[in-house]
Image 1 (tube, rainbow, N blue to C red):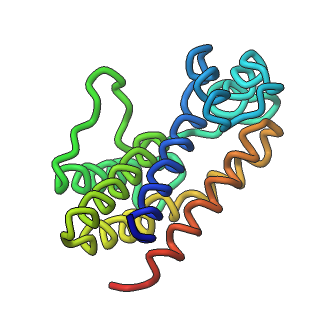
Image 2 (cartoon, rainbow, N blue to C red):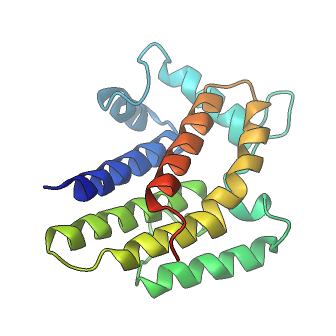
Length: 186
């Protein structure tokens, strides 16, 4: 394996880890997070669940932070965001899970899509194929979506005083590292 393939695989794993962190921490999910070293076991499942509810669903003295891009992007409106995301997914023939029923603009859905793009880049690299279309798609997706709403999401998340503040910081660092790797090529 060469370095670009390794980097794409590492990025895919990091995005999938972030998707797990920002998913509801039921006991099974919490156990997987601990087993994969994504959280400190001293952050008990009950504490993490309470923090999740405080940060994203109920609030704790402050309004909850929506996990949906369209609720942070007044520039496009939620319908515009959903339409653009669906075009991205459809272009790559990516189908959203019928079982999970997450919206296309849910943070976890966007993270999983970026992981998928990285895995496609890795597979193309291993077969000696063209990786640039997946790199270009990831660059475009980050610019038009995740990187566009992440600063507002983080600002609101920081006000929650929950464990998710550190996860928001880690996610921002991941996105910036990925964007740096992709560069500003068109």
